[in-house]
Length: 192
Ligand code: GLN
Image 1 (cartoon, rainbow, N blue to C red):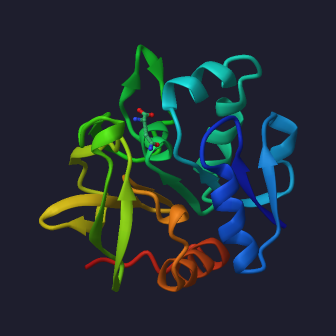
Image 2: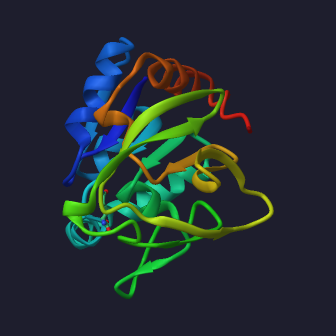
């Protein structure tokens, strides 16, 4: 079995690099039939509006939602978190997989991108925020798993994790260890 990486647009190549580093097979997902042999899923950063527009052509997200609901470990970073949230994006329904409200582009414009120390699971790393969404609130079944100072920047609901930053642009050893245990066992999401 493989990890599927949504590859309509955005940082899918960087997520593929992470998976190569942990010797995990992957497949780039562009069409519903690409989903057949995967047992975990990554939704990359990029531009959520563009991804939602592209997927309309083949209803890819309907099939992705069924897979996520079946319980496979699923990680979304930045735009990936937006796709997993319960928000609409410009009137289009997202995957609704994490009970949370986010505000897009809430950390500022592209030229206000920054790197910062983030507490994530049981380690601290320096990660990038690029036109990142803010997690405004989240439901009772959602656990905070990453913090920027006192602000929650990563959450988990059952088999689904959403991060507002880009660990795939760093691919540091702590993140890779976490990723390996998450996609292989669907565990180790933990709380702080
Ligand atoms: N601002 C983008 C969006 O709304 C997300 C940015 C990112 O993934 N770095 O989709």
